[in-house]
Length: 219
Image (cartoon, rainbow, N blue to C red; front, side):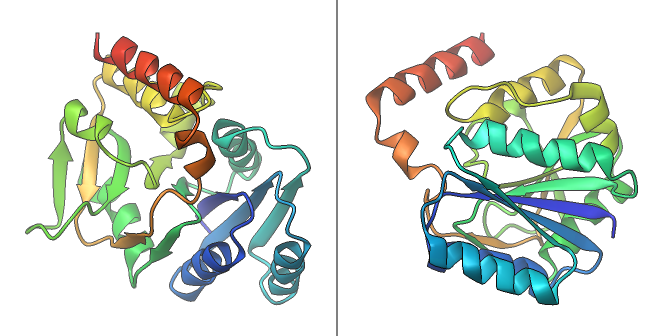
């Protein structure tokens, strides 16, 4: 195994199981860390525990309290840090369905491009295999699937505990170090739409905080 895929979730059994099954069905050399962030669905937890019995590569972490996506991602980063055999970590929302070859294309991007900060799955039907993205384009990404290398994690550390879109602050630190952002145009991940963060997006105080973060990064 050389890649850790971190999948945070708050309930949503159908979407979560479809996502986990999608990762397992087409991912060679992958370890999956499914992190419940305060889920109350006992049936979902039972299903995940049943899947674990047949798949040694699935790790289930059950957080009783909801701490937010940054906390869940940092839990995954700690696991990644401790598992030295892992080379890459991919953060995947539970409202996604990975398509054939998605993870291989993300990993290959690090082999054919230099000084990479993060690699993203395809944002649409575009020609070519890889494309460099400017930072303004990165700010517009939904952030539901991106991969970091061990070198980047060691350089930039943990996610800051913003309530919404903590990846933006993380990427802003990369810009200061002049690293590159790459779109892997043959890595397809279907995004069903904000199941992972839907509760946050409907709360005005979180939207206001998110806008302040974006304004700070752009300046």
